[in-house]
Length: 160
Image (cartoon, rainbow, N blue to C red):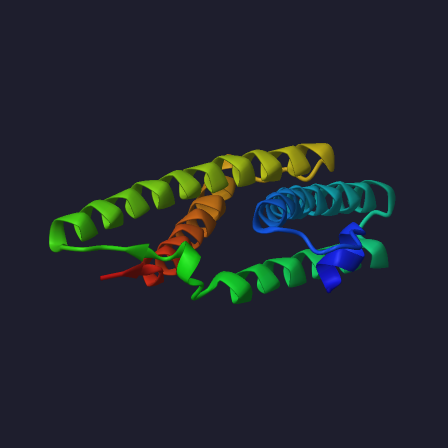
Protein backbone atom coordinates (compact mmCIF):
# COMPACT_ATOMS: atom_id res chain seq x y z
CA UNK A 1 0.00 0.00 0.00
CA UNK A 2 2.70 2.50 0.99
CA UNK A 3 4.82 1.51 -1.99
CA UNK A 4 2.00 2.08 -4.45
CA UNK A 5 1.27 5.49 -2.91
CA UNK A 6 4.94 6.45 -2.91
CA UNK A 7 5.63 5.35 -6.48
CA UNK A 8 2.21 6.16 -7.87
CA UNK A 9 1.04 3.05 -9.67
CA UNK A 10 -2.67 2.31 -9.67
CA UNK A 11 -2.90 -1.27 -10.93
CA UNK A 12 -1.36 -4.40 -9.39
CA UNK A 13 2.19 -5.31 -10.46
CA UNK A 14 3.55 -8.73 -11.32
CA UNK A 15 6.61 -10.26 -9.66
CA UNK A 16 9.11 -8.97 -12.26
CA UNK A 17 7.79 -5.43 -11.98
CA UNK A 18 7.84 -5.55 -8.18
CA UNK A 19 11.43 -6.83 -8.30
CA UNK A 20 12.39 -3.90 -10.52
CA UNK A 21 10.61 -1.47 -8.19
CA UNK A 22 12.34 -2.99 -5.14
CA UNK A 23 15.76 -2.78 -6.82
CA UNK A 24 15.23 0.88 -7.69
CA UNK A 25 13.98 1.70 -4.19
CA UNK A 26 16.98 -0.08 -2.65
CA UNK A 27 19.32 1.97 -4.84
CA UNK A 28 17.52 5.17 -3.87
CA UNK A 29 17.75 4.23 -0.19
CA UNK A 30 21.49 3.65 -0.41
CA UNK A 31 22.00 6.88 -2.33
CA UNK A 32 19.91 8.87 0.16
CA UNK A 33 21.76 7.25 3.07
CA UNK A 34 25.15 8.45 1.79
CA UNK A 35 23.86 11.84 0.64
CA UNK A 36 22.35 12.40 4.08
CA UNK A 37 25.75 11.70 5.65
CA UNK A 38 27.43 14.08 3.20
CA UNK A 39 24.84 16.79 3.87
CA UNK A 40 25.37 16.37 7.62
CA UNK A 41 29.15 16.68 7.24
CA UNK A 42 28.82 19.79 5.04
CA UNK A 43 26.31 21.34 7.43
CA UNK A 44 28.58 20.65 10.39
CA UNK A 45 31.58 22.12 8.58
CA UNK A 46 29.64 25.25 7.66
CA UNK A 47 28.35 25.62 11.21
CA UNK A 48 31.83 25.35 12.64
CA UNK A 49 33.23 27.79 10.10
CA UNK A 50 30.51 30.45 10.21
CA UNK A 51 29.07 30.08 13.69
CA UNK A 52 32.32 29.50 15.61
CA UNK A 53 31.58 26.91 18.29
CA UNK A 54 27.83 26.64 17.69
CA UNK A 55 25.97 23.91 15.89
CA UNK A 56 22.63 24.77 14.31
CA UNK A 57 19.38 22.91 14.92
CA UNK A 58 19.42 21.83 11.27
CA UNK A 59 22.71 20.01 11.72
CA UNK A 60 21.43 18.32 14.86
CA UNK A 61 18.23 17.27 13.06
CA UNK A 62 20.23 15.93 10.10
CA UNK A 63 22.42 13.97 12.50
CA UNK A 64 19.39 12.55 14.32
CA UNK A 65 17.75 11.65 10.99
CA UNK A 66 20.93 9.91 9.85
CA UNK A 67 21.13 7.98 13.12
CA UNK A 68 17.46 6.96 12.94
CA UNK A 69 18.00 5.87 9.33
CA UNK A 70 20.97 3.71 10.37
CA UNK A 71 19.04 2.30 13.34
CA UNK A 72 16.09 1.34 11.12
CA UNK A 73 18.50 -0.39 8.74
CA UNK A 74 20.13 -2.32 11.58
CA UNK A 75 16.79 -3.38 13.10
CA UNK A 76 15.26 -4.39 9.75
CA UNK A 77 18.27 -6.46 8.64
CA UNK A 78 19.64 -7.73 11.97
CA UNK A 79 18.32 -11.28 11.64
CA UNK A 80 16.97 -11.16 8.10
CA UNK A 81 17.44 -14.50 6.42
CA UNK A 82 18.48 -12.84 3.16
CA UNK A 83 21.62 -11.30 4.70
CA UNK A 84 22.83 -14.27 6.73
CA UNK A 85 25.64 -16.51 5.51
CA UNK A 86 24.97 -20.24 5.68
CA UNK A 87 27.95 -22.54 6.14
CA UNK A 88 27.84 -26.26 5.51
CA UNK A 89 31.02 -27.57 7.10
CA UNK A 90 34.01 -26.41 9.14
CA UNK A 91 36.13 -25.61 6.08
CA UNK A 92 33.39 -23.50 4.53
CA UNK A 93 32.84 -21.74 7.86
CA UNK A 94 36.58 -20.95 8.14
CA UNK A 95 36.53 -19.50 4.61
CA UNK A 96 33.50 -17.33 5.38
CA UNK A 97 35.02 -16.13 8.68
CA UNK A 98 38.33 -15.40 6.91
CA UNK A 99 36.47 -13.39 4.26
CA UNK A 100 34.67 -11.51 7.06
CA UNK A 101 37.99 -10.80 8.79
CA UNK A 102 39.53 -9.42 5.58
CA UNK A 103 36.44 -7.29 4.89
CA UNK A 104 36.46 -6.00 8.47
CA UNK A 105 40.15 -5.14 8.19
CA UNK A 106 39.44 -3.24 4.98
CA UNK A 107 36.54 -1.38 6.59
CA UNK A 108 38.70 -0.46 9.58
CA UNK A 109 41.53 0.75 7.36
CA UNK A 110 39.09 2.77 5.25
CA UNK A 111 37.58 4.28 8.41
CA UNK A 112 41.07 5.09 9.75
CA UNK A 113 42.16 6.83 6.54
CA UNK A 114 38.96 8.86 6.19
CA UNK A 115 38.76 9.86 9.85
CA UNK A 116 42.44 10.82 9.97
CA UNK A 117 42.08 12.93 6.83
CA UNK A 118 38.88 14.50 8.18
CA UNK A 119 40.41 15.38 11.56
CA UNK A 120 43.57 16.80 9.97
CA UNK A 121 41.45 18.82 7.53
CA UNK A 122 39.19 20.16 10.27
CA UNK A 123 42.16 21.02 12.52
CA UNK A 124 43.93 22.90 9.73
CA UNK A 125 40.74 24.59 8.50
CA UNK A 126 39.84 25.97 11.92
CA UNK A 127 43.45 26.59 12.90
CA UNK A 128 43.40 24.31 15.93
CA UNK A 129 46.78 22.59 15.94
CA UNK A 130 46.88 19.08 17.30
CA UNK A 131 49.92 16.80 17.27
CA UNK A 132 49.75 14.26 14.47
CA UNK A 133 50.60 11.50 16.95
CA UNK A 134 47.47 12.33 18.98
CA UNK A 135 45.34 12.34 15.82
CA UNK A 136 46.76 8.99 14.70
CA UNK A 137 46.28 7.49 18.16
CA UNK A 138 42.67 8.59 18.57
CA UNK A 139 41.62 7.64 15.05
CA UNK A 140 43.49 4.35 15.44
CA UNK A 141 41.54 3.52 18.60
CA UNK A 142 38.28 4.57 16.92
CA UNK A 143 39.10 2.39 13.92
CA UNK A 144 39.82 -0.64 16.09
CA UNK A 145 36.51 -0.15 17.94
CA UNK A 146 34.70 0.29 14.62
CA UNK A 147 36.32 -2.85 13.23
CA UNK A 148 35.39 -4.90 16.28
CA UNK A 149 31.78 -3.76 16.07
CA UNK A 150 31.65 -4.58 12.34
CA UNK A 151 33.18 -8.01 13.01
CA UNK A 152 30.64 -8.82 15.73
CA UNK A 153 27.75 -7.68 13.52
CA UNK A 154 29.08 -9.81 10.64
CA UNK A 155 29.83 -12.80 12.87
CA UNK A 156 26.27 -12.88 14.18
CA UNK A 157 25.07 -13.32 10.61
CA UNK A 158 27.08 -16.51 10.02
CA UNK A 159 25.08 -19.68 10.70
CA UNK A 160 26.06 -23.31 10.43
